[in-house]
Length: 205
Ligand SMILES: C[S@@+](CC[C@H](N)C(=O)[O-])C[C@H]1O[C@@H](n2cnc3c(N)ncnc32)[C@H](O)[C@@H]1O
Image (cartoon, rainbow, N blue to C red):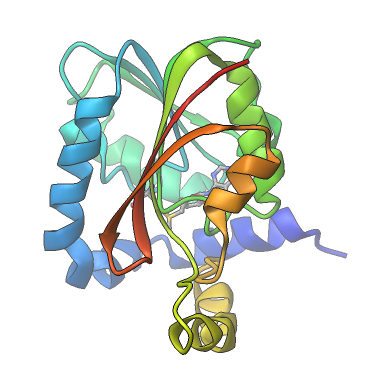
């Protein structure tokens, strides 16, 4: 039987060729968000779920980046597009739920639209907490389930569609999951309705 993680990995492999086209309608809005969150990262950075590499051009010059993804086809698109241009970025195939780095390795961890898909999100967040240094910063741009009376249940109802097509859920409680993973110093800013959020966490250990 194919396990949960393998199932989602296969969905991202399947969508990898179309991913950028499907994301295009969001691009104008998301590009300004991507630029904005880059002001928060520093030092050596782990990007989790780099996908096709949409954040890569926006990193500040001085940072060193390790960019991981568990979908080899998504990762290959990022690597072939940016690998030769941005020498400060290393691309690695890796599962966020089982990070192959020692404790306290990174100053910053960046995720954009990733924790909608990580199959066991709290496990992935615990791993991020482990590999981020004490006092380090977790910088996230994530979409979550709305708390609004009609919209929230509608997102639950529609969730099977993106989950089947992409492997992404539109009804995750990412801030709640961060708390469950042991994070406490969480600053949340709504970017679009109460769905798209900028989340900054200081890693207190
Ligand atoms: C919706 S895409 C977002 C890609 C990119 N961050 C962006 O903003 O365009 C989600 C990405 O997270 C990756 N992903 C999901 N679960 C993962 C896991 N457990 N480990 C590593 N990557 C994962 C998927 O393969 C996919 O590339």
